[in-house]
Image (tube, rainbow, N blue to C red; front, top):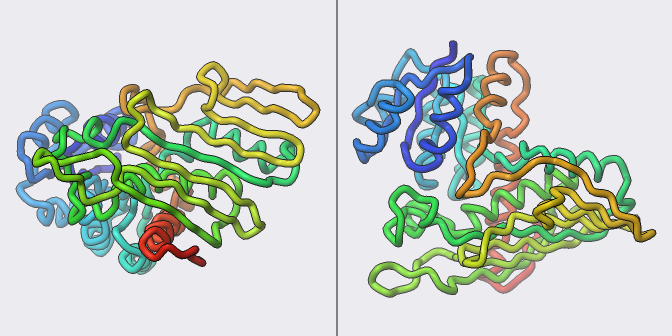
Length: 343
C-alpha cells in the first residue's frame, strides 16, 4: 500500500486528489499540510491522514512514498525538488513551475533521484481526447491544416477555495501567471498530445479585461488571452483562454484536415463530431469532460499509482509539463515584446 502526502488542501486537493487517493485500493492518504489549518483538518477528517505543522515536516516524513504538490504555483518547484531529493515520487499540479529554469531543475532532480515525476495535465486522460488523438493518428482527417482550441469559464475565484478576489490565483507573486497558466497550459499540452508534434512559433495578445480586486483595481495577472501557434510541420492554429466566459464554460477543440474537421466538445450532444469533406458526418460517443461544477475521477492518481507499482514510464512526465509550460512562457514573451517568438 503506497502512502501519499498532500501539500496544499485547497480545491484541487479536496475535489480531486484526496478523493481519488481515498478511492484507490493501492494507496492511502497518510498526511496533509496547509498553512490554513482548517483546510487540512477538513481533508484529514474526510479522507484520513495526519495533519503536519509545516511543509518541511511532511516532506521529511520517512513513511511517505508519494508527495502531491497542490500549492500555489510559486512553490511547485521548491517543494517538488525537496520531495524528490528525499526519495519521494512526486505528482505536481500544473503549471509545473513559474519559469523554464525551475522546470528544468525539477526534471533533473527526478532523474538524479530515480523517482517517478508526473504533472497533473488531466485533459490528456479525458476519453474523448484520447480518441481524438487516435483519430488524427489514423489519418481519417487527412493532412492536418489548422486547429482552434478554447478553454474559458467564469473565473478562478469560482473554483478557488478562497473565493472572490482574495484568491491566490489573482496574486501575481504566488500565481506567476493568470488564465494562461491556470487553463492555457491545459490546452497547450492537449494540442501537442492530439497532434503528436511540438510548437515552434508563438504570437499572442494577453490582457486583463474584467477581473478586479475588492479595491476596484484590475488584478495584476491576465484574465484573457488569444494565441497563434505554429507546429513543426506547419500546422497553424489558435489557443484562446478566458476567466470571463460568463455565459457558460467552453472547453472545446477543433482539428481541421484535408479530409474533414473533427469537433471535440463543441456540440454538447456529440462529444466528437467529424464533418467530412464529402459532407458526411460521423458522431462518436466519448463521454463527458470535467467542469468546475461537475467533478468526475480525473484518472491522474490511478495512473500515477499504476506507474509506480508497475515501474512503467510516466506518461505525463516532467518533459511533457516542460513543453506545455514553454508554450505559455513564449506566449507571454510575445505579448510583452509584441514579437513572434521562436522556440
